[in-house]
Every structure is written in C-alpha cells, then in structure tokens.
Length: 205
Image (cartoon, rainbow, N blue to C red; front, top):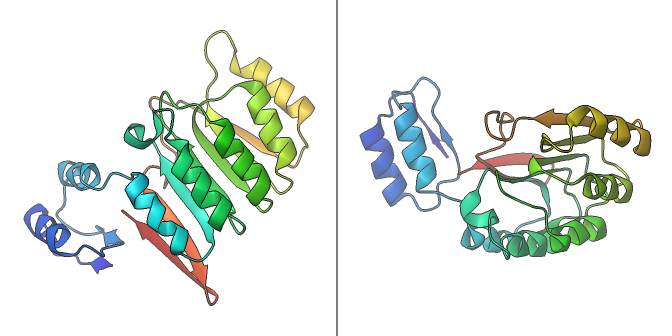
C-alpha cells in the first residue's frame, strides 16, 4: 500500500516500476493528474494473468473487473473469472463485470449459479438480454441489487423494467445506467476485497 500526500507523476512511476507487490495507491491530496492516473491504469490492466493467482487466496467477498475490453471482449475472457469463482466464490457478495461490447457467457452464469448462493449485488457493465437477467435473479437467492447497461433501442428500458419487476421478487432493486457515459463509483478499478480473520482488505490496481 502506498499512502502519500507528496506524490507526483514521476515518483509514482518509480514506485510502480520497483514495487511489484503494490496493491493500493491512495492519491488523495497528491499532485497526480488525471493523465497520470490513466497512465497507471493503462499499465495495470486486469488480465487472466492477474486473475489466476487469486485462486490461491481465501474466498473473495467482492470481485470487480469492469470496463476491461482487453480481458472481456473475446470468447474466452470469462473463463478465468468463472474458474476463480468456482474455486473462491462461496463468500462472494458483490460482482462487477463487463465492458461496452461484453456479453455474459454461459460458463460464468453457471459458475455463479453453482458457487455464489450469497451474492447480494451484481453489476453488469453492458446491455444484457432480458431472459439472462431473469435467469440470474431466479438462481441467486440472496440477490438484492442488479445493475446493468441500458437495453438497446429495440428493447426499451421502461418495458424491460416493467417485465423484470413482474418476473422478479420485490427484494431485487433493478438499476440501469448508460454503459457508454456513466460509471458506477468504485467499479472500474476495484480488483478484489477479501476477508481474513475478521479483517477486510480492499485491493486496487
């Protein structure tokens, strides 16, 4: 973890190059600009190489890999996520996943059904077919919050919202957001949150 109010973009680059185990950077009251933050994020893209080692961690409570086209916009992008969830998803309470052109795979959906009975919040950063949303909600007994990208023009939000509220339990709060312009706070750069010995640790990359 790196905490400092005296960081600038040059020193941050040096820390990143030398501290390979760096998990969190607190940039509050620092001199880092948006350009510097974007550069840091560009160099720390979440990939399968990032996700696979998490299989050795204690069960996760939160996993977020949102807005990551490099990982997710290919046919096999969900495979490492599904494998991780099957191994370490028994305590998972929150999942944020997706990108502009992302489509949730059957592999990941079945992994959620099999391993994530405690999932409370699911954020899918892309438009997702109605029948997939209903299936997810029906198979996740603890789900309370479902946030997804707005449907396409031929599948308007009001009608989909009405159908979802008719088909889903009232316990589930359905939220829509503009997948191209709006981010959910904490969604794009959150990597994991794990709990060990009663303590929570939030990791950012």
